[in-house]
Length: 415
Image 1 (cartoon, rainbow, N blue to C red):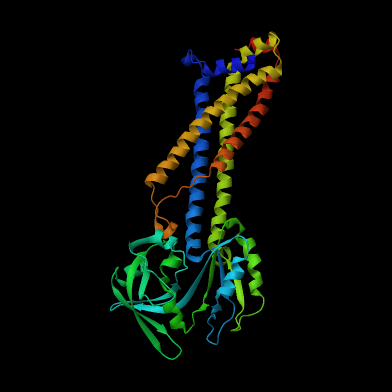
Image 2: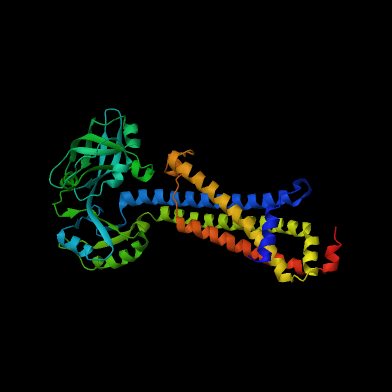
C-alpha cells in the first residue's frame, strides 16, 4: 500500500473530535449529494424505460411491427383487400428477421343496444393470430377460439365501449353493417372485455373472427385487409420494412398494389412523443452528474483548507505536489464510491418497490398505464455509475491542482 493511499484512508476514517472538524458535515453533504444524484438518475432511467416499453408494447401488440396493406381503393374510396395466400406468406417468411405472420380483416359497423349505439371498427382475426397481447389486456370473460373456417358469433369489447353501451360479458348485442345493397345485421355474444388504456384502440375496435368479417365484406378465404408481421429484433424494424418493399412492385390478380408500413410509420405521433422522453432523460442525467461533481469538489476544497498544515508538513518532509494531490484524489474517490454505493441501494430499492407493489398510481386515461412503470437495464445502470465516477474523478483531479499553490513555509503557518 502506498503512503498516499494510507494517509487518505486515515483522513477518510478520522472520526476523532468530530465537534472540532468543521469538514465532517461538508463530507457528509458531499456524499449525500452523490447518493441522491445517482438515485434520482436510476429512478428516472427506470421510469422512462418502463414507460417507453409499456406504451410501445401496447401499440405493437395491437398493430404488430410491420403491416402489409392495400394501396388501391375501390369506387367507394374503400381500401381493397390484399391477396394473403400461401404464396405471399412464403415470400414474407423468406426475409431473414421476420418472426410471426398473421392475417386480419377490417369492417366498419355499429353496435346497438336498446338505449344507445356506437360506430366501431370490427377487426377479424383467425387461428394464426397471436393472442398474447389480448390475453394480457383481458379483464373479464375469456378469449374465444376465433377461426377462419366458421363464424363464432362472439366478440371482444373494450371496457370503455362496454361501459358506454351498458353491456357486460355474456350479453348478446346486435351489430349492423352497410352492404352493397342493404344494411346487414349480426347478433354477437360478448365473450370478453379488454382494456389497453390506449384510447385510440379502446374506443374504436371490436375483435371478432376473420370468417365473419370476410363474409360481411364479400371476400373469399384468401382475401384480407392485410398482414401483420412481427420481427425478432425491434431495432431492425425499419430495415426489414425496407427489405419487404419488393412487395410493392406490381399488382396481384385483383389489380391491388401492396404497401409495407412499419408501426413507427403507422403510429408516428406516439413514437415521436416517446423519442422526446430520451432528451428529457439526457438532460436530467447531465444535471445530476454535474450536481454530484460540484458537491464532491466542495467537500474536497473544505478538506484541503482544513488540512493545509498537514499539506505544508508533508511538503517539508519531501512529499511532492503530485504525491499530496494523490492523497486527496484517493480520499475523494472513496467519498464518491460510498456515495455511489448508497445511491445504488436507495435508487434500485425504490424502483424494485414500485415494480413489485405499484406504490405510485397514474390516471390511465392520461398516461395509458395505471401505475408508474419500471424497467431495469443493467448495462445502462452500470454505464451511469462508471460515467459518474469518471467525471467526478476528472473534476477532482482538476481541483487538486490547488495544492500546488503556496509555499510549504506559508502553509505551515496557516491557521
